[in-house]
Amino acid sequence: MKKTIGTVLVAAAIMAMPFKSIAQEATATRELGNRAQTIFVELGGPGFISANYDFRFNETRNAWGMRAGLGYFSIEDESMFTIPIQINYLLGKEGNYFEIGGGASFVSVKYLDSYFTESGASREQESRIMGTLTFGYRKQPVDGGFNFRAGLSPIIMEGNFIPYLPYVSFGYSF
View 1 (tube, rainbow, N blue to C red):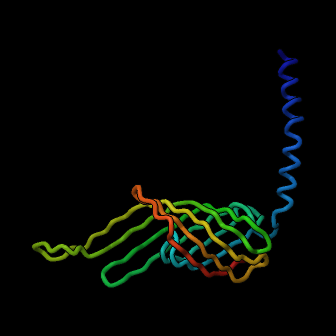
View 2 (tube, rainbow, N blue to C red):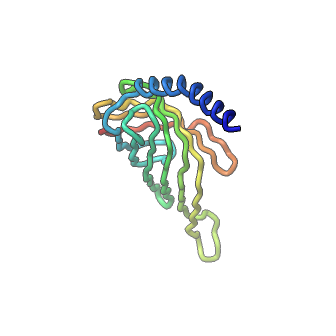
View 3 (cartoon, rainbow, N blue to C red):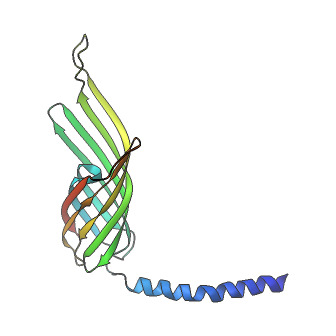
């Protein structure tokens, strides 16, 4: 029994060696530097109109990261407040990336109910969580500076899938 367990462990170690060298090569192709951070204003997308902070989880530019933001806008008697949060991944090099991400946005809408009651119109508020995706282009200079993003951000809310919500953002990377 001990001989069988030892044989299995040696075989597993030998089989894992090629995978370790492949992982090391993949890491070597990543753009290293200080952990990229970005602040940006986004029109459309998960926050509709929002200010956001995005960062990479480690010191590679083309890797996993996260964004969080706050959004608000008001027109006459209606207003919307949003909190978009997403995990994202950047594919590319030299400051040009394809961005793919997924997360959720808290959305709170206040509006004046258009139905008349005995006391007049009433103020209503509705809040929801919606699922969000991001597929787009990101220009994020390796040394920092002007940041640009554009793409599509599909939304999933209450069983409905809206595949074509565009977004564009401008900001600064450091």
